[in-house]
Length: 594
Ligand SMILES: [Zn+2]
Image (cartoon, rainbow, N blue to C red; front, side, top):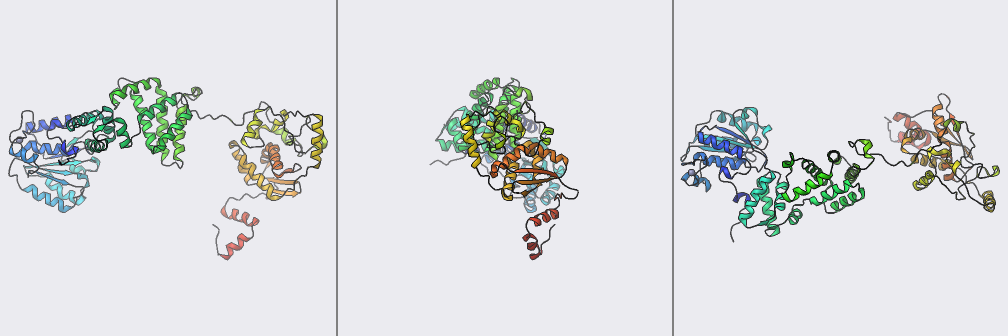
């Protein structure tokens, strides 16, 4: 069997002209060789796999060529060129500084520098990943770099230029290698595929080029991998399956769903993508890239920035026409924010889903109000405003015993304070329906709501009901039950009542009589706050405990009576009041409260 040579080695360029995507740079090098104006030290910077070492080798071969061509290339026929091509030349020395970064390694190199070449004019020393040299090694090298013998030329290569000391930078001619464009990479891959007899469509090569992210070596090794996987028949579907690339089809569908405000479809699509094993951050970055591609395809001027195959280009342009620039900008911003928050988020799936929901609402009609810069964050209110406003003053002045649900139209005074939830009222108000859905028996904003409740019961039903109420037992009120339903009420308070909830948490609820409890509040203001919710609160407690005779008394504390526990010690004292064992525990274990 024929020895298998990886494509990156087999198709390594041997002339300046065959170097892909660095034409400006190779031309400069050729001109320098032609005119004989050679520096003694070069620094090749750029990302991995873009041809730094390759160019260094071609350079070494060319300057040693005995019969250079007119165009500045090596002849590839003389003894020197042959020895280079067969990798047996003594005029080239390569040092990988990533693994040989000690002073001794550099000393060995300096020894080599002293010896002039036997064949050819120059000795070329290539130091790869030069930023990895230790500082001692750097210092040892600096002297030689300053005053090298005439026959020595250094080519330093690095992926991280900023790590190179200024003393080195100032002694080198610097060449910056570009990341390769997708189009360049695809062209080279096409050439390799042709040489190897591999069938490949442009789309599949495009995916490989994008995955390689500007590095030809990576592109070629991915190419090899896919060729062996597909048996030499590269198609888009096979390549994305092998490279774990998300099909752009998903993004096209997603953006279509965004434009039609189909939140549901977006969520389902995302679910499908997750089920395929893709990560949320990978997906959101892909979506951002897709949106960016749509943005650049909107304008002819930016169209060259679109690095996709020709067949897909048209689809991008078509979808871009449907999207407004405002939409694309806002969606991009949402994706970016999602990406930034992704790591910190505990619920990563939700993070992405939220972004999708926001994107899908961007073109919704009510977006006109928000100006499109921010996604519409208006949620449909659960508690809608009632035209009949609640007058707090009136409520405060109302007698303690008043029961909101007991209205004149409903029952006779004799059965006051009886439960009204026994008959099923026909409720026409939407609020009450909403309340039922939420599982709440009340609505804070609609204390007077019950006024609108109309009972449609016959006189017979009324009589039967009254009789039933007479025999109905009121359940005993205990401190535990009271505290429990008090806490439950706090939890059910809507978000905008957070301040009240905070107040209620620190209030002491005390059962004074079998059917009367007292709440001590800090001041008058809190008292009126409590009066505002009195009816709903009481109704909640009554229903929960099962006693409709339960009454509440809200009292403003006497000076010095109300103690709010702020510091840990104050809190501890309050806890001790409730549980004596706590102090015993503290003493037993010699604990301190801090
Ligand atoms: Zn030659």
